[in-house]
Length: 130
Image 1: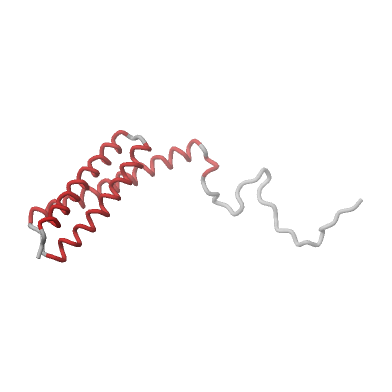
Image 2 (image 1 turned 30 degrees about the horizontal axis):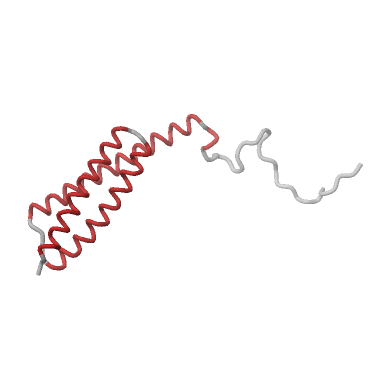
């Protein structure tokens, strides 16, 4: 049987996750990396708390249709925020590669040295004397 305290814990966790998701959306729009990092961490913590409370509620009963719709909407919002984070990450990576081109991995083995990659030595000429 579902306890009233369990349902209230779930409702609080759901509201917190919704609020944190909106906070992440605002941080992404602001474009400040520190805000995005802290907001992402808060969303992750809220999602873990929501998952725990949801498991308790599901073991003891089922959710009303309205709560299922809120969960579905939260899942869609989180998917959009994840996509926005991935886009922001790609933009930052492109900007970094345009500023510091050497940060890109080399296409050719060994990277570009002043005169190209030296051939592998056989070891036959290890000592040069005059």
